[in-house]
Amino acid sequence: MACGLGLLHLLLGQLCSQLLGTFGNSMQHHLDPQTDNGSWEPEETQDNDSVVSAHTLLFSLDYQHVQVPFEITLWIMLASLAKIGFHVYNKMPTVVPESCLLIFVGLIMGGLIYSLNDQSPPIMDSDIFFLYLLPPIVLEAGYFMPSRPFFENIGTILLYAVVGTMWNAFGIGLSLYGLCQVKYFNLQDVSLLHNLWFGSLIAAVDPVAVLSVFEEIHVNEKLHILVFGESLLNDAVTVVLYKLFKSFNEMPSIKLVDILAAMGKFFLVGIGGVFIGFLFGMFAAFTTRFTKTIRVIEPLFVFLYSYLSYLTAEMFHLSGIVA
Image (cartoon, rainbow, N blue to C red):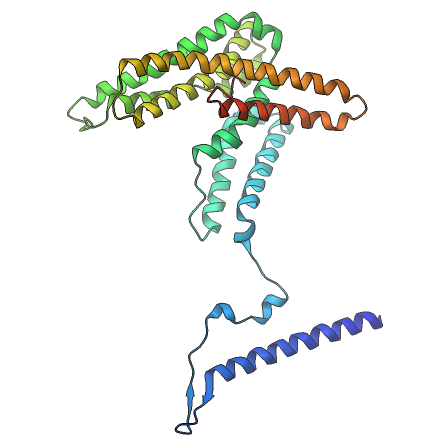
């Protein structure tokens, strides 16, 4: 009890001395005796940053210091809570699909960030998406993928994913280019390359709602794995097409050799991604042979080897999604 009272007296003494010191310093800075004419004149005030406010000794708020990790963690937590609520409340799938619910949560989070942030909002660039957001999404889809039916129908899946996605991308790009040539829209300055670039951006369709309906009505397993496998691999195809058209857009002129090299690179990217993924899969299988007594680190190896395979493939300009 005596120790607590002594500590309280000490804190009060320091607070009073700080207040008196601040007040005395401010008065000394504002009033300065002038020996030339014997009058008192105000002196120039210092910056506000140099003056220590008394209330900061007890409580202060520095949101900008923790803004980025705080908002990212809050976003992940809200998305996780929404997913839990979606599966706990059984009637929710009949009202709204899971993807729509997550979009709604994202809109709420974005509105909160926009309303509370007094500076410019955080900007999502391609590096953040491809290096941090995309790998866990692809890992979740590939880890829970039914392996046997997937590889039994790999030919049809590749046909839909590769040929179908390319057909979709070029079809959208050429159709938009044809519309741009109509003088009524006044879009003649949009080139064919920009239209193909946009077509590759939206060519991949992610049938999340369709797959959730398939699981509820217990549709044929072959149809389910075809749609699921195509949605998993078409992302790799569109990423390759997007990067190819982006590199074409940065070239001053495109020759026939560049187009042939791009076609060869298209297949090299896919085959190289498979090789990188197989190599790290072998490393993961060999490492987990020695974790029988330390099972707690096995999930860590799953995340690390998967993420390293993605980063290694991206380092060599291969398909990290396939890897």
